[in-house]
Length: 442
Image (cartoon, rainbow, N blue to C red; front, side, top):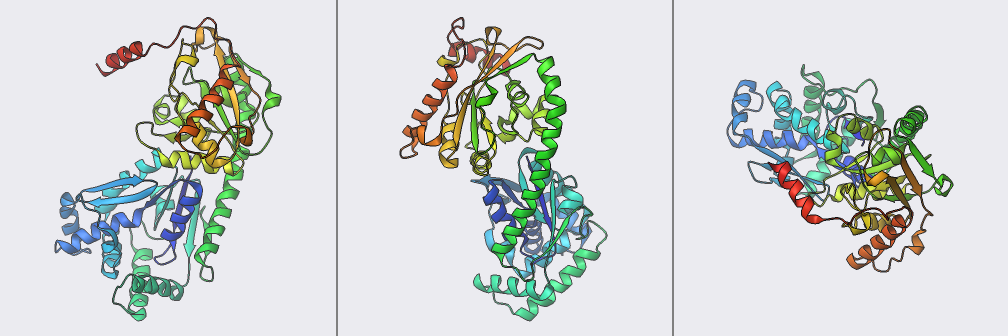
């Protein structure tokens, strides 16, 4: 997971840049300014002065904001309605600046923003993301531009949307808002000590995006170095404690985009692969694993991508594709669920792995995790068999549709099964699974 904070004054292009970067990286963009704009709009429509802190605080009880993400795009419902561009007017901008200086409003929105960042890789833009909302963000950028450049951009943007205004008015309001945002006592718009300053006065939007991506790439490189340092220290200990025995490590490609696919018998399969592979791996892990004590902390440290299996988590798939495209090794379990003590050949499999491989255009490495009676126990031997990588052009893709995904998934899983000994394992019984689920619900 990665959290990116982009702060700076209004009109610097934070939102458009953050959106573009989110698309490029396949992560969620959280428009924090839109949250304040919705509250500002509510106050204006209900006759509440945005600068009257007492009145605004009292009126918050009538505000219900619902933050949703569809295909990675943020949608905010104000009392059940998406207000769209209504929140982008100059009046609403000034109202947003005023309400954002009120402690009750910031407290009202704080948990919403932080909870989103805890559950997903995100990029947020605003005035105090790196200083208040996400002080521990991995990447912090303070994006600035001259008042003239920012006023011109905002004026052109408003005119394109049919808003009746003038450059002079936009410039005056922008200077006033800058002063309000930078001098207020509560969460002022200031550069975090560890933020990187980026002035885009003379840069196009595309050039700014490239600069930001370059900064993120540099930070990611440092994180990879940190991962491998942790790996050198922790992996030998884990191999000893878990009695991990890797086989055929020479088959793992040393570099290049790669999708690692393995059978799934335990929550600790992630550790089994991470502690035996010489490469840094990004795991696609179901969100439930992140709440398991110790394990959750470990997979977070490993940079796992959280996937919500209950929903069509397009964002997680997109992140995995982008990681593999950029040359990283990504790991996923085609079964999508743990199936201990049974023959994996008889369990259901999902098509997510094939979808990632198709869109990333990468090779697939089959892996079989084997334990006694296919059940994980501490201090009991775990064998991790690495197979021969399957080049992308040998996976058998034709159109990239559902039938293609199913055929390639089966081919990959057959290669996984061929690596292990399943002779003593009973077939999977779905009825037993249903009984377990009923007991859990009770």
